[in-house]
Image (cartoon, rainbow, N blue to C red; front, side):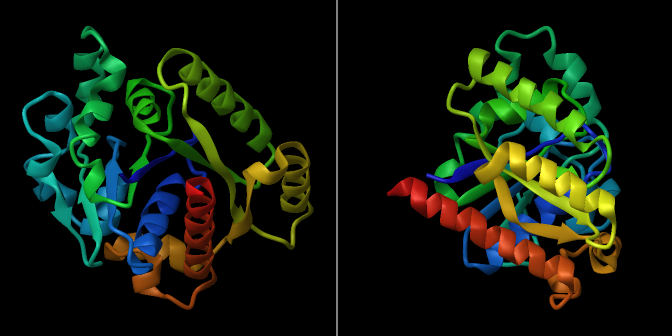
Length: 258
């Protein structure tokens, strides 16, 4: 059965979608079967792999509302082994339409359980909020990766999300684990980046990934070409960082399976 990993942080602009796309692509290059699910109404993960999302006629919205099954909307990508569940702006409506329904936090979980055995990894890209869509993703997930930008407010945002994870454990998903905290947009030339890294590592210790994703032009440019960084510029520091992250994730999975 595949491992379901949510990529979540309620703060925007921390590299969450970049992480979801490039981790999924790097796992696929490692010959893992991966399903990337775009849970964000902005649809940046979808456009980052497929280009024009406006041409799509179905999306995760249709699954959450019971009009389609995940199997009906799976898209193939340029990478063999990497499939995509797309999102469009209509996903905003799902939060409003689901809010009145019983067990509204479990709609995504029920949907993914029907396909989870076909994949090694399912990566869920969450919206930059702690609303019902993120709640669905964290209820469905086995673990969560938390991208943290190396900036002044990083610890504050991290603390809020960890409180949310604890509440979800208590109410909906007692087995939810922290897969790891990932530093993004790291610039070793600045004292601030170094200070944030020290503070987070000192506090969270082994919960922090060893690899740090640097600020990198290729990571910023690749989505405009509808490609992950390793297909756009595999030798770039950003692409190499996410290949290393994939190795860390796979190593952790192997240790957990023993």
